[in-house]
Image (cartoon, rainbow, N blue to C red; front, side):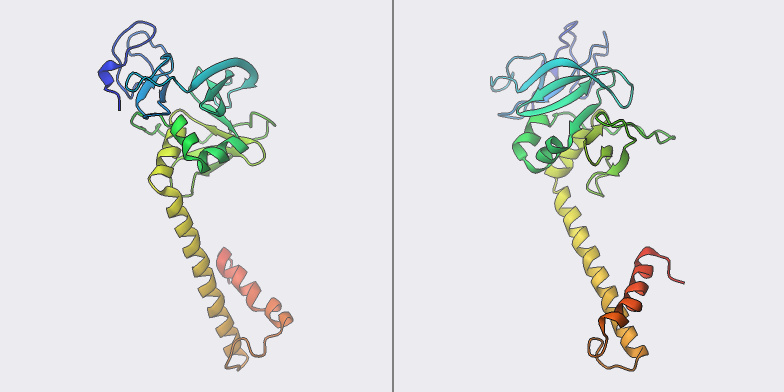
Length: 241
């Protein structure tokens, strides 16, 4: 990681810390990126990595007609490596189209390009939850805890993309690198096993109620559909009487 003392505000030249989103003196935005070669921290105003000399992997594009779901300011096209996103210069939020977000989650090279090398301090939670409109269709998005256990709640439109507040993309990539998706899969497998155990218990109970030794011996499809399946659904959804 590049030493924080080697980072200077491109606007006023003041030394800035690696975790500062803006210059503490002139308030200029300090968008930080990771070198695609050595992952050292660099400012997006740098043409080359100060550690290994590789050219930067971030290019700012033109403004768009899209508005930030959080603050309503104009979003700008930004390309990080081969990954295209839209950023808000006012609040530092990021919009990522659905297919691009899936590629980031699956591709370590894409993750390396967007991974900011600064401490991923979480934003303070607002007491009031605000639902935000999708950049593409304008409908209110769902709030989703990424990976179910990451603790990073993002705004998702299933058909179009994901909006992330400042720092949340870093948090998600850091979660993936720490093995978070493997934990999510393990949780899903355990839930499936628990449902299977409940299913077997209900089969056995239904068999006992009918005086059948083997739960599978005499239960027809109609009997099962009319009894144990309904009971299983009620049990799983918490609506059992």
